[in-house]
Length: 227
Image 1 (tube, rainbow, N blue to C red):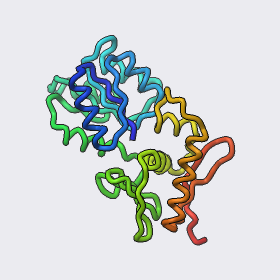
Image 2 (cartoon, rainbow, N blue to C red; image 1 turned 90 degrees about the vertical axis):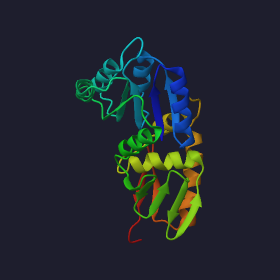
Image 3 (tube, rainbow, N blue to C red; image 1 turned 45 degrees about the vertical axis):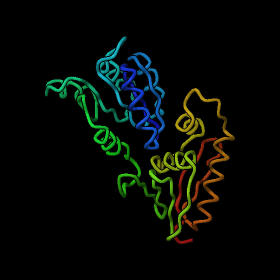
Image 4 (cartoon, rainbow, N blue to C red; image 1 turned 180 degrees about the vertical axis):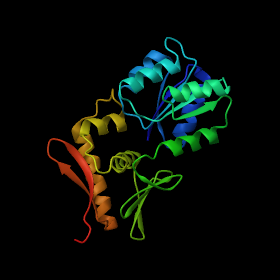
């Protein structure tokens, strides 16, 4: 899962980034409101952690602009302020959650988990399920029919994208942005390679889930029930 962290305190940003990466999240870090808005508008993130007190644009201005532009990504606001009125203002601007500083990192991780599962069915804090497959994001293990196989980080990220967009087509450019970053030089054949890897692992597990290619559009998960 890819997270955007917009925090101007360099030491805090580095510390949070390291903790998130240790928990298997991919993190992009920026340090002012203008860059934060630019990154948010790319719409490649599953969760955004946004400080309120930022240079150039404050967090509330960034959030209002992103929501006005149609960005619906869940946002956790960070601020040194803890007054009820500040919380209400943040939520009214479109925030999904609010965490006053200082905070325990375990609480931040729990709030990220709570916000990040909008399309996949949650089995536990670290697992997603689609039909007969279970993906554990903590161990990067894929299970089906009492068998399991280890995934690479990219395979797990790709499957997470497909599960969270179940019922919708995921195009290759969107997948590249989410797995490699929107400034990446990765190409469509990189996506094709990892789709092939996942298909082999589905076959090994004897899953009825398939990754269907939609010509000139992208990929979608389907279930071959009854076949």
